[in-house]
Length: 356
Image (cartoon, rainbow, N blue to C red; front, top):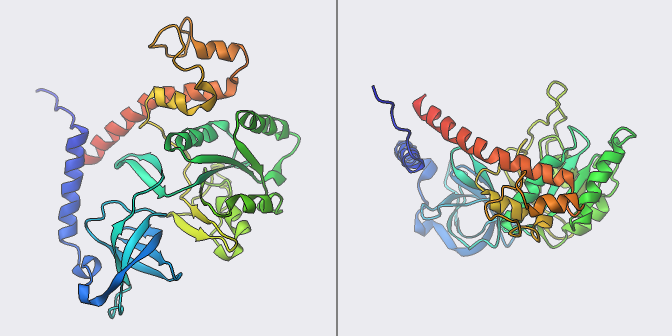
C-alpha cells in the first residue's frame, strides 16, 4: 500500500479555514452579530488597547475604552493598531459590546513571530522601539537576546537591551554579564541596567519611553511585569516568581495590552515567551540581521559560502581578525542550524494535529 502524500501548507490552511467557518456558523448571534447602523454613532479615531478573540478593547481620543465587535472586512487586528470605530449610542441590555471596528489604518511597523499554526503572527503594531528585557534570573543568555535582535532588525524596529534584576548581580556572574553587555554596546546597541526591586535605573528608563510606543519582549520570568509596575505603579500587573522546579519564568501576561505613561508615551506589554523562533527567515536574512556582519556579507570567495569551514569565508576571517566576536558568531551559527529543524518540526506537528 502506497504511503499517503503529506498535505501541502496551502491544503492545511484551507482545511483550517473551512473548519473555522463551520464553527462560526453555529456560534450564537448575540456574540457576533453586528450592531444595527441606527444604534451606532459617527466614525471616530481609536487605538486597540487589547484584543480578545472576536472582540477588541478600543480607546477613543476622549480616553474612553469600549469593547467592540470587529467588522468581518477587518481581517487583522492587534494591539497598537490605529482604527476607525463607531460606538453604540446605547449599550444593549445583557451585552458588553459598545461599538464596532469598521477599518484599520496602515501600520507603520509591526512586531512578528512565527506561529505553529498561523505562520508569521503579528504581536503588536505601530511600535517605535523594542525593549529586550533580560535578567540575572532565570538565567542570563545572549542566545535569547540575539534572537530578539534578529527579529527587531528584520522588522526595522529599534531594539534596546534592558538588564533587569541587577540587584542580584554578584561576584559569580557580574564579570560575564558585563562583558556580554559591553559587546552589544560596542556594536551600537543601547543597553540599560535596572532593578525593578530597588528602583535603580528606572528613572533613566522612563525618559527613554517618553513620546514613543514601546514593546517589552523577553523570556517569562525576566521581570517584564514587575518592571512595568515600577515604571507605572497604576498598572498593577500580575507578577509571577521564577519556578523553583524548572528554573523558568511563569506566564503572567496572557494577552498584549497597551498602557499609557502619565508623562507621555505608550507601552505594550506582550505575552512572555521562552524562545523566539526564527524559522520564517532564510539564512541570508539572518546574517544581515547581525549588524556587524553586514560589511563582510557578499565578500566571501564563493557565493554559496555557508560561513562554516568554507575556504575564503569573509566572516571567518573577520572573526580571526577580532572584527566580530565569537559569542555573536556562535549564536548566529546556532540560529542557522535551528532553521531547518524548526521548519520540519512545524510541518510534522501540523500533520499530527490534523490526524488526531
